[in-house]
Amino acid sequence: MVEVTATDEWRIIVPLRFNRANHGQLPNIDCPEVDDRGYIKGNRPNPWGDTTVRGPSFGVLAGDAVRVRVVRDDIDGDVPLAATSSDPAVLTVRNANGLIAPDGELWVEGQASGTAAIDIHLGDARGPVLGQADVRVHSRLRVALTPHLVRIDSTTTNGVVPAMPIDQMIRRLRAIWRPCGIDFNVRATVNDTTRLPSNRVNFMDLESANWLTDVRGILGLQRSRLGLAAGTRDQSINWYIIQEFVPGADGSTTVGLGVSRRTADDWGVNDTGIIVAARANGAARDHEFSSRTLAHEVGHFFRLEHVQRRNADRPVRDTYGRRQLMYPLSSLSGGTGGVALPRFDNVGYGDGVRGCLLTMKNHNHHSTDGECATARNAIHSNNWF
Ligand SMILES: [Zn+2]
Image (cartoon, rainbow, N blue to C red; front, side, top):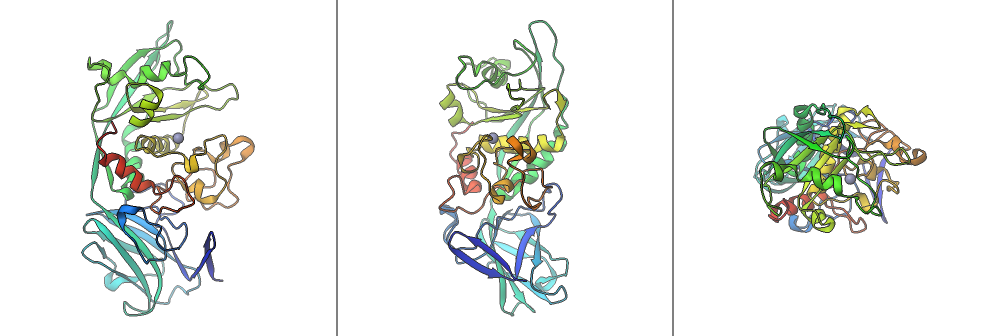
């Protein structure tokens, strides 16, 4: 059988593919997601220049060694394959003589910011090329992150401090954002207490007069704790961990919010930040789900939108959309009538869980593509806290 990967009117036949090295398992810092959406040329984000590479793309932080899996679709496991880098000053191959064992594991190391192609040859490094990958090596962008454990008292009762395994969640956050070269400088956890009409955060729909009252109060906690005037910007992503949002009438509930500077200005609130709930509908959330929510809300903070600008009520229906971190549902079985369940269990984290891909490619027909470049540009803009 020959694997055919198609996008739009293009069709390229390749005898091998590249996969996340630990496909099927949880995010890991040395296993970047592989963006294999379409093998046409010229779909890089603008600042990265043009390419003639036909193949998937992934990102590496300069100085990091990472692994990907070369999957043989129409080649026997004992046929020798060898990898080379088009520019060893940018990216080196760590396998001895470039040779790829039958398990397909390929280690590469980012050397300096830039782009390089990996060629997979039949036989040895001089053999014909059977497949390629386009690799972006990033310089490190470091972003400050301040966790807050927020106890919300009501007018009549004391709230409780939410339970969240912060260190474990940050490990996942780092792993998910690593292929974009983005790292986090995590500050000491702050304990905050506030008072709201109920013990939960009411994030109401746009039609309600007071839809932002609770959210505005939470996002302002860091500034008010420090006694700073409205309009003062904190040079950190303030991550507010709350117990729970108020569920909607239909039983669905918000589990996270990411408010970038742009969103804060649109909404007319002073402060940026992200809010992640430890519980939903009265029950504790799985910590791995919460970790992905944290990474997703950080994506909003970096100005990323939901896939194709379609929210939880109308998510895209393609498999690639479900593989993206910015898919609007964290649980694929959570869509109305199970609408989001994939036909095939190939998202990479089980068939009920959205993926963690931050797109490297920038397809013309995709309205929110090139996410890695968008996030880095937002950070470079210096106007985003
Ligand atoms: Zn979202």
